[in-house]
Image (tube, rainbow, N blue to C red; front, side):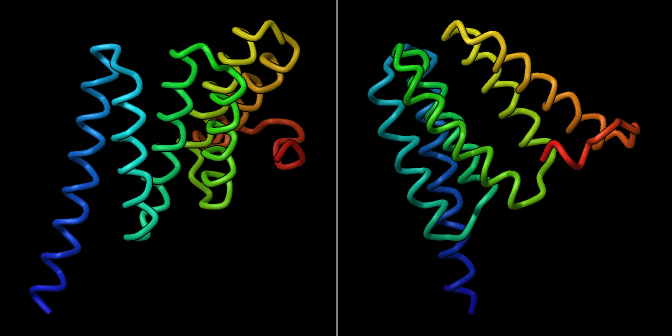
Length: 140
């Protein structure tokens, strides 16, 4: 049992180390290397059943694609993260990704969609803080 537990911990540490490397490569603007290491983190997060980590890795991969100038691919990855956070009921992650999606919409020149997604992020945050909002549940 100890060996199995330490194997799980080792896999989590491996996943985190890959993510750290990806962050470092991103900071150095070595985006292909960042994508490689986020991809390894993403793969491990699926193997060890860490859906919150998985969602964040999808979001981070989307961010890297935006840095590379591929906004369509960036949005695809962020939308996957949004779907995961919704399914998990993780409102902080959901609001974070909706805000990211809004930023990408703005960068694409789609201000109307960007506004919609920013307002959704604010509604999620209001729900998180216990602030009443109109039609909150209908928007999700």
